[in-house]
Image 1 (cartoon, helix red, strand yellow):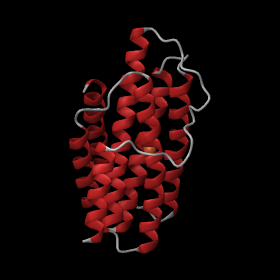
Image 2 (cartoon, helix red, strand yellow):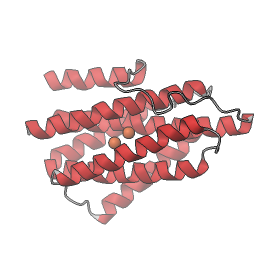
Image 3 (cartoon, protein in one colour):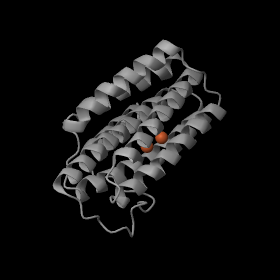
Amino acid sequence: MDSLLIAADNALRTLLARPGASEETPAHGLAEAALTPAQKKRAGALMRVNHVGEVCAQALYTAQATVTRDSRLRIHLQQAAREETDHLAWTRQRLDALGARPSLLNPLWFAGAFALGLVAARVGDRVSLGFVVETENQVAAHLQSHLARLPEQDLASRAVVARMKADEERHAMQARAAGALELPAPVRAAMKAAARVMTTTAHYL
Ligand SMILES: [Fe+2]
Ligand SMILES: [Fe+2]
């Protein structure tokens, strides 16, 4: 019951509240770039996609922490979730600065990611960790592609994306060190396909 309440609390906070970061944004001290309207729109769309990714990260980690019976693993997942809360706050700040809005479908993304997290965690802790590894690897690759697509002058967005990429790579490494199983190729392919639907939609909606 307790963990159910924690999960509900996390869902409401992620979707409705302005998340507070425990650490200053990597964009701190960087002036807003003078962007053309088209560049601003592109940067806003990319940061919306990244914000959706962080909404999903909240859902995944919370679902996994809710299910596991291993208290050490729960602490590990909750620590990663705290860092994802910083990412959520930083991407939200970038959306505001760029005059862009979060995805209208965030409740849907949260629910979908939460359900996937529950399924993975029910199969077993090592599968749950394998799911973390694959998700974080895919997110890191995605962030790398954004570094190529963000306007070059938008140093503030770039600083946030670069820092997140480093954090996500560390999350994958830590999950591997904690005993993650490698997911079968068809599962990884399905996750990639689902991520493609999400990122394409979030670009516009
Ligand atoms: Fe993240
Ligand atoms: Fe992460």
